[in-house]
Image 1 (cartoon, rainbow, N blue to C red):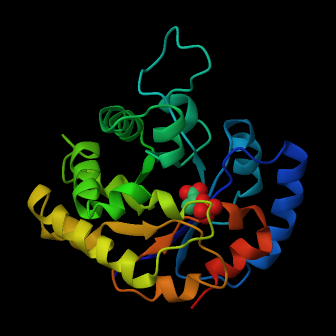
Image 2 (image 1 turned 90 degrees about the vertical axis):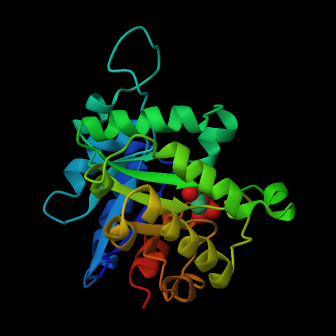
Length: 249
Ligand code: PEP
């Protein structure tokens, strides 16, 4: 039985003051939520604040990126070890990083290895663009991103990976994938994990969905057999909306 996993991705939003106001409400709203891993993915500037805010709540905190080098002359970058001072998780391979910061599957793979090497758990994002879907390449793209992103990882490493299927056309557009469209890709990704790792890894790895998830559509998505949680972006900026998604049956 895979435990449900819900992570809110704040992206580049919220000052320290705004984040404190959010947490005050969020803690109230999620009371009673059970059988779910809850994670907040916040900007680097808020990691320390949120880490303190979630103490003894069971909530996890995630960075939204790291660089793969250990240290050095990489102005503006943050290493895995630096993120690990505050974070339990890190998002890697988000389509916004692939698009705006030219992150390739090779870079994503290096970042995943660096993160796991320092004890971070990884929310590994992949998904096709609208053009790729229109051309019938959804599964081909997902398979390539999965295989190349996870290249060289061991079966043991996979305990630290949560896969997030995030079709690019559904992110921030309000144009969410139907539960059936998402389930089809999730089931496919799980099948690919079998030959790459083994049946147990395929069975136990959590695969979550992201792309315009909100309190109204979360329940239908989360009902699907191979969808183990979700990664809301926009909706997670509102503590009540995120809590309602978390409490979706
Ligand atoms: C995301 O941030 O990964 C995301 C899916 O955003 P949104 O929910 O706003 O589409």
